[in-house]
Length: 58
Ligand SMILES: [Zn+2]
Image (cartoon, rainbow, N blue to C red; front, side):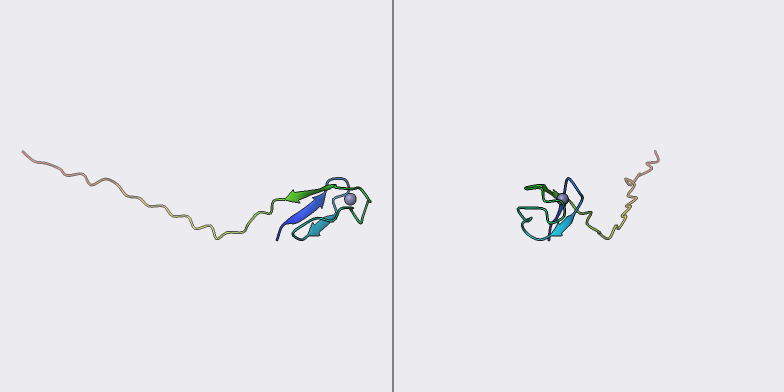
């Protein structure tokens, strides 16, 4: 669910659509969608794949 933040007073509203008026400061269409930082499981995958080196003996 997106979060909308009033650009004037910082009021946070959670929902699909922000209210027409900010209930906090009364400004109209003052909400901006806030992009939440999605907590993802950071799995660091380090694959040390060295190319196989074939030592050729002559
Ligand atoms: Zn506001």
